[in-house]
Length: 135
Image (cartoon, rainbow, N blue to C red; front, side, top):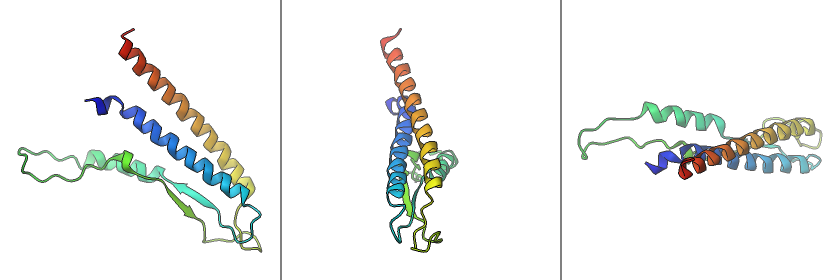
């Protein structure tokens, strides 16, 4: 019962963690924009998380006995972000492929997403606080 009570908080926390990781990766890309041979890195998460959410409802099996087999319940919160390097293209003569303009745009977008998630998390915690106090 209590695990469902904090489900929204857990999902928002996962989003904040991914946004923080993405901030680190983008900052690292910007810092190494002029490093010869450096390949930009990116965080992959949203599609895997969405797939896990979709599978959660699809794989729910009904059992009538404790001896029946069940499929493992895909927990979307168990999905981990993946940091990948873009090695398939080279943008500069020195072998590097970091586009500072693109990285700055991604940094701005990620900052907006992070701030939105933090605001939603604060609202959810305030809602739970109100429910606990009963006011």
